[in-house]
Amino acid sequence: MDAEVMLGYGNEQVKVEIKGAQSVETILPREMTEITDLPAAFLHAVEDGAIGSAPLKEMVSASDPVTIVVSDITRSWMHQDKVMPLLVDYLHREIGVPYDQIVILIALGTHRKSTPQEMEKICSPEVCKLVKVVDHDCDATDQVYVGTTSRGTKVYVNKLVVGRKVIILGGTVHHMMAGFGGGRKNILPGVASRETIRANHSRALDPEKPMSDARVGCCKLTDNPIHEDMAEAAGLIPVAYSLNLVVANSGVHSGIFGGALDAAWKASCDYQRQCFEIPIDYQADVVICSSGGYPKDMNLYQGCKGMLNAMRALKPGGVMLWACRCPEGGGAPDYFSWLQPLREGRLDEALRADFTIGGYIFYLTCEQLHKASHVYTLTELDPELVAPMGIEASDNLENLLSKMDFIGKRVYLLPYAGSIVPMP
Image (cartoon, rainbow, N blue to C red; front, side):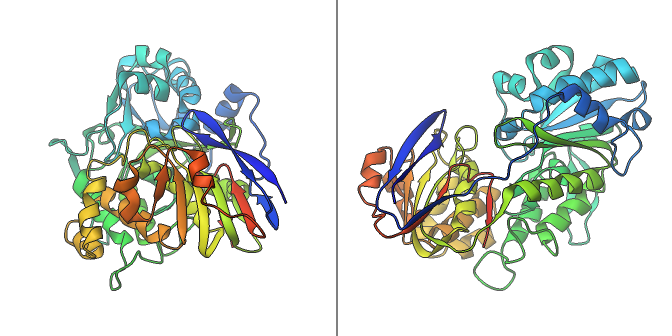
């Protein structure tokens, strides 16, 4: 059987041809309703559609200082910039909040700072002219202690989410550690201190074995220590309202879920599950996938999500072709510093002794890559640099394809692997 597929690669599309396969199946998200009237959908989400909460205008008054927490540039494909102007306008015109009482706080977690151009892409140029937009700094010295979770995480957060009315605007997606992104994750890790984030994320490792904790991972919420700790930490911040976006595969908004932080977010998770968790009958010999193009493949820290999802559809010892451009390299400043303990066979030991978020994403990536016999990766990453991880890299697609044999193989195509979660 012959077939072809177009894969997102940065801002480009590349074509992969398959010849002689036993079968070729494309795993796509289910068809989703697209919102055709975004202002109307927004109004519904903040008024009569409020979930577990009174409408937004009853939660915020004209005299309140307001902080809007918004996800960073790595979530820009959620098109928060289309909703942010509606939210700021509603706060100002309908509720009467002066522009100078509104601050937008970009939930960077431990990610790099935003450029002025990225701030405009996140919030929209018009909003950036009306209200103050600032980056969260996880290393700032003026963060505020708000309590300790039952698991012992001391929660320090940005001062702009303390003593102000907090509104969260973000997107809901599956997440490789927390089960789902969005919601409580905009507080921890979004606007938390580095040490708070580190304490939470270090629970990704199994407490006894040299491996990731099996309770942690994509789709997993029940008994997930990272998720439960995040939710408890977020509960220490009296969030006034949350808006949770779900985006169709086309990039158009499909759902806006507004209301109480936990209730509205969980409703968005349920909807996300219906659209992006795709049952499969078997695991394939070959998987061809893309992380989804920019910004999902801007670096390996972000782009690995596509591989992690796609690996669920590959049989142990199978072969994968993965498009992940990574113009920013590893992404986290310490990402590739973990290569040395990897080469020395002491990565688990080293990470437990000095846990970092970048280190764990590196650890998880290596752990999953080695489930395949070969992972041929179309990327700008240095082939020699990433080879110890289990990545066979090249920026030449034909070179990678020349190493692959499709004859008689069962093949899955996942052009949007950063979003789709195959369910064996």
